[in-house]
Length: 327
Ligand SMILES: [Zn+2]
Ligand SMILES: [Zn+2]
Picture 1 (cartoon, rainbow, N blue to C red):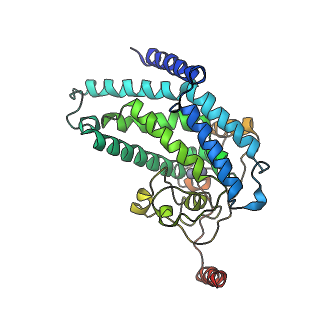
Picture 2 (cartoon, rainbow, N blue to C red):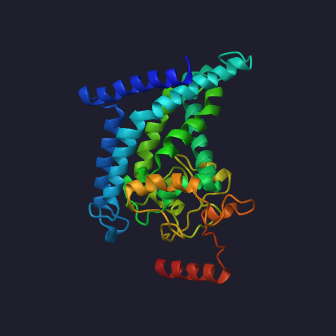
Picture 3 (spheres, rainbow, N blue to C red):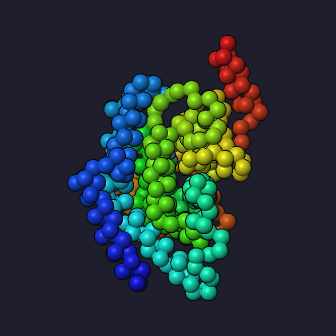
């Protein structure tokens, strides 16, 4: 089967599955999960808001965010992500054959006993997510796509879906290639993504609850808000986790002080409307970059620009403020 044939078959299969969710609703259907996540998040945002003045149902940007939830979960997913992944899996398997490697490879995740296979799959998918997210922040042309997510100055549960469609289709499929070689199937991969989706909704909630040590282990609003900090605590940002914070701890990108960050990006040139945002990184590909980000040596102009090492005076001032608040 060619790539296109494989894409088309998978597209039809997923579309049937997608329609089935509405004709025969079940608890495990992705759409039920999104509905449950939205309902739960709304409830917690109303009960324990982090920023009361942002509002819940009248939060600035909420309507655009909800449009993004529909766009990503009801259009981008059924209209291609599954098909892209399935076609990628088929192509990667062809490469395994082409290289004369045994199929399945002798040490694949699938060959492990069941509970371990699940755990290893989860760790691999989660690490791949961390690595891809970090790369997107590091590589100027990719950052332009992701910048849409970071241009938000208030956050709420639905903010999690403010993404460019290419970030879903191209990046997720690309990041899936190494996992194919390790024996992760598209079905398991998609299953894990649905778990990550729930966490993604929760971590963007405008909610403040004392989660204690959990803030150091899994993605939560406390640590993910720092990922959205306008003034980056470290070059390229911090807290890139999709689920577990272990990768941030391992690679030195974990950051969780007591204070609250201001959200957004510096030199914000991201349009505020949906169409403008979807066109923004694509148009940028065809015009000479004002900051010259494609020129050698100037790659940082399009990267998150706001990393400024805090001066000792500034650090001491913040410490004093924190101490005063505690008293
Ligand atoms: Zn990010
Ligand atoms: Zn986010």
